[in-house]
Image (cartoon, rainbow, N blue to C red; front, side, top):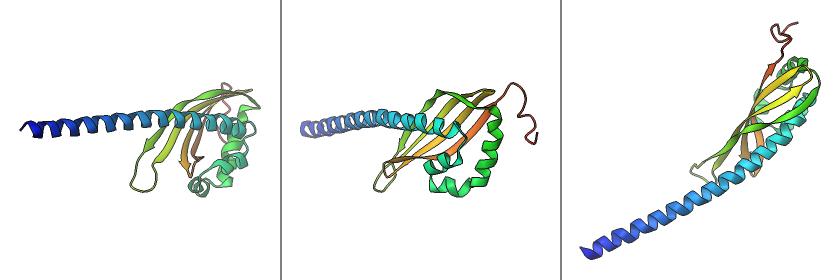
Length: 158
């Protein structure tokens, strides 16, 4: 019985050590992914919003997003939000990266951020979804919510 309890204790200790090491690796990797993804957003959002340049968005997008968000759809959106006037400043982004593990060669990395951009006539809140593939962050979703005090967004056709 004593030998059995020693084996159970040793196995339990091994499991605890391995779990602790795994949590440490995940925490370290998570911080690294947060830093990488935030740096990507901090470069991508101003580049896109400064001139509402569809090429800046499409060049950074996943193939799935490029297939779904056609250049014409993006042009219509960007023409609409251009009513905010010229780009003034980027106020930064909040959010984080996440990891999920699937059977196969690697885990799946994604990130969700809310970025704020100031323009002459208002601001925009931009929700940006990222995914990391083959070591490269790409935009999987890009949603703009403009805010203009003059009411120019009340009628999209004006």
